[in-house]
Image (cartoon, rainbow, N blue to C red):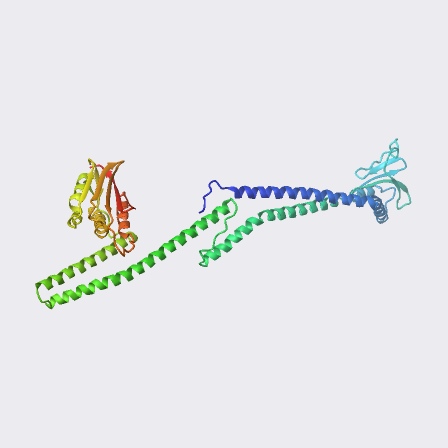
Length: 438
């Protein structure tokens, strides 16, 4: 039996938590990869005299530019253009001790202070196209593309770690969903006995439990349908056999009476007696058939309720309804308390309840003991109890209790109750009808 779990909303929280954990792992991975990349690049640069090589390449490009542009002392402003075009390079040109210009500005005026004093950067001789030698202070920076590459590597590694960890975390959920999908395909193929996998405590588990309940409900309906079909088949088979025997006998006796094949009036009366017995036997069988369809089928008409006093209902029950019981030699012991209320009943259906009880009395009741009838008004209900002793019978067939179930169904339609129990040789039936205003 499945237990319904309320307030289950864990799947969203689990997915959020998985995403946060994966994101944190991805960010940390990106930072670590970026730091490792930068350290590796810096160590490699320091180990291979990166700045020295960059400086030499810068000076070679400067020499080529001077030759191409024919830079002389008179048009040294062209060096500023070259310095601005160069990337990752800081250059200051000097003539003697006067700063002519740097990479951003030209200083045509002479400065009385020598800029060479206190400078920590190396100075290089640069020969112009006309042979003039000037000084150049060169400082090369690290290529920013190295930082960009380190950032890209960090982002890529972080993204991959984020996706991988998130996939690993939700992989169990995906596997569970795929398993449920496979089990649904098995159920869809007709194998409703296949059990659904119930695992976890979230919305997916709730869905699996709902499918399991639906499957069990369908199985129960199929079982009830198969049971009803089997019972119908058995009923038709039994009734066809049971009806054929007394009907054949009845037709035979009627044929004898029609053709006047009897010797005297006593024999004729005997034939009529047998016809009467067979007719009642057919009636009992038809009643049994009706009772069966009343329990397992739909009723043939709507109930037509009318209001009766509890006193008149019990008087009719004690004085006339059990007349056949008294005709068989039985007696009644009616103990009825004061009744002042009313009940709402359908007389025809209630009569069927009494007929069923009479039928059981005739079959199983022992007339040596009085039939006890108790009645009282209690807790808004009219309670009626009928009790008798069961006579001993050999080769007694086991009862299907279809008549008692018919009574219970009719009483339930009256918003009442019907129950029975056996205690030793005593058998008791208890009815209850709701009281109503007059």
